[in-house]
Amino acid sequence: MKESEFIEQNKEKWLDFENNLSKKDANPAKTSKLFVQITDDLSYARTFYQNRSVKIYLNGSAKLLFNDINKSNKKGLTAFIHFWKTDLPLTMYVARRAMLISFIVFVSCFILGIITSIYDHDFARTILSNDYVNMTNQNIAKGDAMAVYKSESEIKTFLPIFYNNIKVDFITFFSGLFMALGSLVVMVTNGIMVGVFQYFFIERGLFWESFLAIWTHGALEISAIILSGGAGLTLGKGFLFPGTYSRFQSFKISGMNGLKIIMGVAPVTLVAAFIEGFLTRHTGIPNPIRFSFILLSFGFIITYFFWYPRKVAKQTQNIDEIIEPELVYKPTIVFDPAEILDTTKILTETLRLYFKKFTTWGSITLGVSLLFSIVIASDNHNLFHAYETYSFKINDFLNYINYPTLAAFTGTAFTITLICVFVFLKRTIIKEEKKKSFFKSPSLLNSIYAVLLSTPLFISLILLDNWVFTLTAFLIFPLLIFMSAVATNQNIFFFNAINLSGSLLYKKWFTFIGIALLFFSMAFVLYLTSFYGLNLLFVQDALVWMLTDDDVIAEKISLGLSVFQTTFSFLTFLVLTAISNSLLFYTLKESYSAENLISRIHQIKAVK
Image: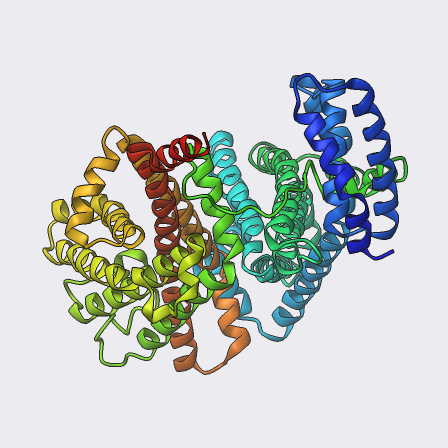
């Protein structure tokens, strides 16, 4: 039977079940009967529609009643034990292919680092830096090759190492957002770095001494990085390959599973940092004990993260429940402009619309960011940026004082992005506008006026070159976007929108500020993950090495990547802010005017 036929045949029964379940005085006998029927349908769907939405729907419907009947949600210590005993191992089993890929890439690049070092004796200086190589050579000459682990006290060693390692783990994980390639590149660079580091001591006849010192903590530390790489691949896989699920559903599933893994890795990183700070420095411990400790560490990783998950999986039925954690199917959601949304709902609805129309928003931000990157990277006349500086940070993005041409260019980018988002969003929310062509849309003209008036104001404040005006520019920027949203969605001129915005935001300023800060924080995290992740971990250098060996072209690619990271992050902030402010407008409008409520009251009177 086709899935469509199966749904058509049973949909009345399923709707009856939902209606009966939503009643406070639901008939227990009827509910029990329907529950048995739905679980039968679920068994059928698991057999014939394993990766289809109908199975998610039936699975979620059955869970709703099951949880309501049993009321046994795990809390506190029980939930904690369940996570480590069952939940995380099953998640690791589901992600086993991603873990294998992460491991293979790391080991391959580890070997590549050793082979390259054999043929290029200066390669270690390129990877590890001249200062580190010179310092280690001095320690070797003094007869204490591992002195680097003894240079500070235990606490001063432990805390910075833990911070750095946990940062690497999370950057590796979140790099999976970049089509999963980010996590792979981190694995490549870390694999090469560890291989070069190990061969550096082998070349000097210090293999055994270095092995025992490095891998005393490295067994857990490197394993944590590989596991984080697998978590990043899991995250990226859900976004890249949604299968028969919606992209948002698939990303939600993969994100939850990847987050479980990275949370399971965090304690391993903590223990590794503790060992490096307190134990590695004691090179006088007998070698058999140190070697046994290394074997014990690797044994723990293999047993808990690979062997035990397979064992738990064999004892667990319906492992696909882990792939779809608490994911309840919901019918297609249509935004209702007359509905009053709370702050949480505005946030979730913004993200839902962002992912639902990701092709549209992604095309806008990617297109403008790529154009921006090409123009600045190919600028040999220092019109937009100092060409000799091959990085492009957020302060360079707004450096209008030294480069007025940049102000005009970014102003154009902001204007195009905001107008496109406002108008496309209005046509998505208000269906009537789809009947007219884009250029005849009644919202377009007001949107153009509003954005052309608000964007130059933001840029002009920065051009005044005073920290007070610059701070003011960033504080009022979300407000300017909200006013533009009001002008677009209400189809009024910008100056009229200013007056209406004041009325709508009266007593709602904290809500508005909270939403603005949240999406600014999200964009800032995206910026930090991409910029510092790609630079501090030498990922950007690795990408450039893969693309070209010409120094001039490499410099332009490096600059272009920096420009892209900064531009894409800032434009993402603009898109999210424009969407959230449009939704906030409809909520505040209904709260302020009660147009929909009054209309329904009139309809009731008319019926009477």
